[in-house]
Structure formats: structure tokens, C-alpha cells
Image (spheres, rainbow, N blue to C red):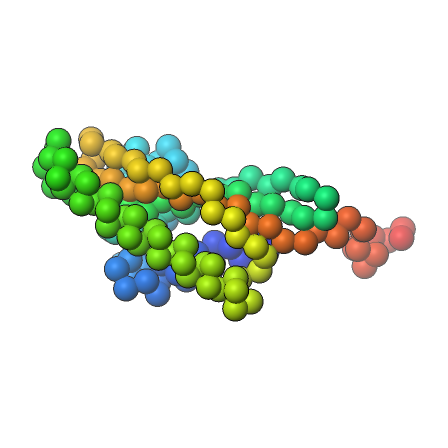
Length: 156
């Protein structure tokens, strides 16, 4: 799976999840980095939102492993209102866990290339902009052939 295929897949999940409901006119999906969570996302997405981060690839034997994170974020009202903050985090966990369930089901059904290993989920709060989230980190692995593709080289 290439990074483009991964992001298209994740955006597709954001489009089909009933609470996120990303669309071309109602933006609930955003590709960004962790630092951008602590900037003003309100100008980029609507809540609840899914923010897909970039990735890191490692190679182990004949496997290519891509580690990536995504954040589910929700807005809340009233600064320092921990009841609202915890409710937003709970909503994000509910949505994020469902994304994980869907990814696992799609792997099992062969709709998603490779194996998925669940790594971690960490709650996050942006008190300045009044939203909270949960950052999920997963690792996906797929086979990596070590032999060069002869069709790609003129000298092989």
C-alpha cells in the first residue's frame, strides 16, 4: 500500500462514518501533523474531525512497516470545564475505536492491504482553541520484495 492509497482509504472512512461525515463541502478530514493540532484547526476542519498524520517506514526482513497516527478531535465549550473536556475525549475515543474496528475488519476481509498492529491511543487537549482529541498510532506491514523489478531497469 502506498501513502496515497492509505490517505484515500482513511479519507474514505471519514466520509462514511456517521458522526464524522466528511464531504467536499463539509470538511471533517485533514492531513496534518501533531503540531497542527495545537494550532487553530477550527479554520481548517469541522468537528468531529479526523486528522491523518504522516508516516515513518521501517524495513524488517521481507516486510515494509509503516507507522502512522491519526487524531480524532471534537470541540467543546467553556475553558477549564473538565466535564465538557472529558465528554469530548470520550466521544473521540468512541469514534477512534470504531475506526480501528473498521480497519481491522477491512484487513480481515482483504479490503485493506497488509497487517495492522495497534500501538497506542493518547488523549490530547487544546485549551486555547477549545477542542480535545485522541491520537491513535498504528503500524501496518506488508510484504516487501528485496529483488529489483527487472521491468524498472534498463541494465537488468
